[in-house]
Image 1: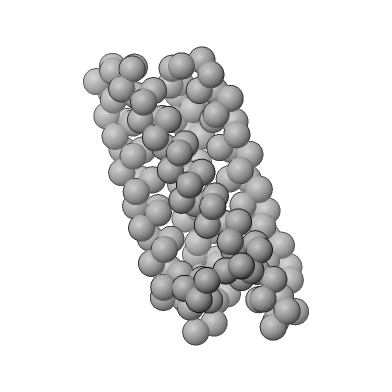
Image 2: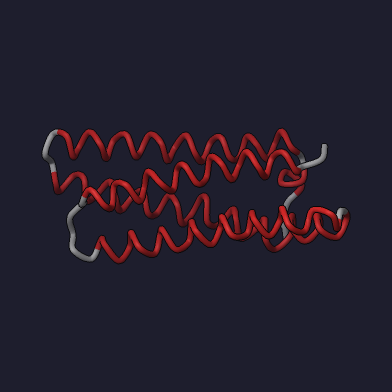
Length: 137
């Protein structure tokens, strides 16, 4: 079930802002490790990034899907298509994290992996903007 913070535009936006800022900071750290040619550190940062996406963003999206989105469509049936699009964003994020986890089995960070992390950030930023536009106060 979604908590009350998910139902309020400003508190929900704050949740998004904290999570995305952490993701961007970790991505910047990953870029620095790659630039300095520190593959072991880069791999460790990539592991932390995956953990971040799983425990922060993907756990958050589960709460949205289980409570917030159902309530939005129940209260505003005309938002069904927009909510469906938001769920698709969540699916893309889950698939991208799964792809990265698969790449991590090689125990090194590739350019493709870095691009996948960067794509997650972009998907999430666009998603958050669209989602926050739907929230009523």
